Length: 122
Length: 170
Image (cartoon, rainbow over all chains, first blue to last red):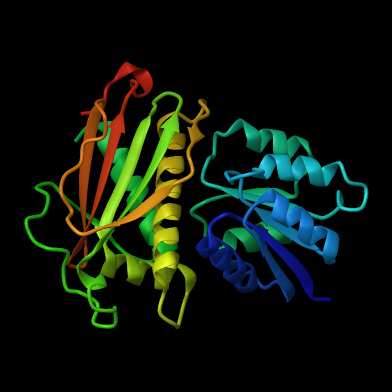
């Protein structure tokens, strides 16, 4: 079944790169939604069926960790796998996100193979 | 070459190669020439512009990182980055430069001091007509010039607090 994707990143170019990388990783894509902040993402989640989420950490309004906290606190949404993509390897918010049960974490820069390996590993 | 400078060079080289598919070589003596051959497809005026991206970081060390590059090179990089067949727009190009400084800064800090967390500002970008040397409010400055197939990229880092191990930047 095709996978409906939500990409949350304040950089429009990074959203395109992630979308392309997911496609190159061999994921059969259905609808692909994009949000520039956690707040926009929550709105999209209330309107559409989403199967997989990629989110940045540093974003205006609502950052990636706040978004994940909101998501994991929602009974209807908390089981959607979330992959965190960020350039900040040592950032404590990454550990907090892992503690909340995210699917995985990828550090930028990355090759599409890193996404494929992560998605295939679970 | 000191460690800080070497780490900064290898960090930006790795990011340029991995995400933008370009090879950059450090130039010890900087550049006297212009931005390199322009892109004939760019609208008139844009080929002589430069794009500057800047990000601030807090922690150990604290400071500012800035990258400056010709608009024509940024245009090519944006095309590579997004795998575009159409022309990249000016907003996409600026956005790409913001993402570049975000990645360089995040990776540089993680390599220098992996056990210490840093706060990063949201990147800021702007178009400039003259690539003059800049100095951002005090601190130790490191300037790195990279050659990309006849074009150049300048990266400047200002440290306002000591780098890891108590060493200051050169």
